[in-house]
Length: 134
Length: 134
Length: 134
Length: 134
Image (tube, helix red, strand yellow):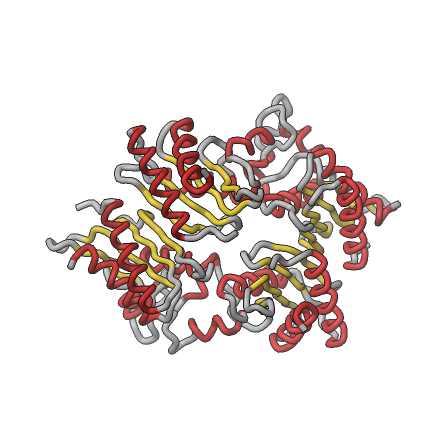
């Protein structure tokens, strides 16, 4: 399955709606399964530094096909993949990036959110994913 | 004036509508006046290489406050600014990038389009600008 | 509010005066709110490596609208945003970068200082900010 | 001779004064003989794209110890140094960059100006150099 722009826009809209509810000004990035940018929105008043972070979280998820914070399980102190976070131009291994998995288990893309607290970013990303898969 | 996400989305929608009419699968990027990404859409079947080109055209327009192809007037053979296109990490001085100018003359952002022929990209970019300023 | 060159020069002068008092040879960078360079001074005998660091601290502050060391609160061990410092081409999350906030709360720019000990760099940056906002 | 910050500031002031006379909003960069940034000023309303161009012109002059446009004599069509402009991360071989030569012939730095027409940028750069050497 290929992620369409209609699906990506639905993800952005659902993420933005949740962000509004939370009172968060978020950057939301949707990437395809190959980690190329498909759609992006910077909500009004979102900080500039989070543009790159949102794309980075989505890229982290797309490249490893797991949530961005799950990548941290591999590179955190005591885990075997020391410095994995320096690969691929710099990963963003913390909450806010989620893969989009089709019902057949195939990854079709990823979403990354940055602008709020990590738990808020994750909730916004989940809302975006749910718009496509729920 | 600060470009809002509602305005940027209206620009993306108008650009995509024109692209559909032309039968072009375009990448469309909207940046703020300081050349930071505000909104982006990759239409289905748009080539991957044009993602960066669309952002680059918009960045070229935002940085110099003129159309992307007007920058070429400065760097083309016989013009005085040889190799200007190598500045700022690489400019995209060909048709498809337009500044967004408010009625008071202030630049508020820029749009960049890539995916079709240069004339088509320019027409799509103009449709996006017209959505905001017409 | 747009940061003027007169304001930026006043910030540089105030920062340099404080640096002289402290016996520090500092690099001082003033950026606008969108992280573009507005004014810069390398005091005599300041180390070359600190040119980029001073700009990087100011960029870190502008992009996240907080002091550069406050960004470390997000990415330090135990905090949730592991490797955030690798975003945006490399952040400088340690003392010496401060946002410039107008009386209405709007960010209008940032200053970054490098050349002395971190506490000295911060004191110099604060002197620069005070020149504009005190 | 080492270029001091007092000298660099005098160059910036003289350049800005000439730019005001010409009605040009210029970016002015002063580099030392090793092409490291010493001082910089972006006049109000100068275009963002010219920040990098002004530094690039000064860098071009410092690296080759001649005016930026004289570098073009080596790389222009018919000249032997094809593509020299792609060296050093991208040269800016057009008017507006000048070396600063001490009375003993030693190069002590360079100035680069961007924001106006090439002839204006050159005139502003010359005014900056004259402030130090006249």
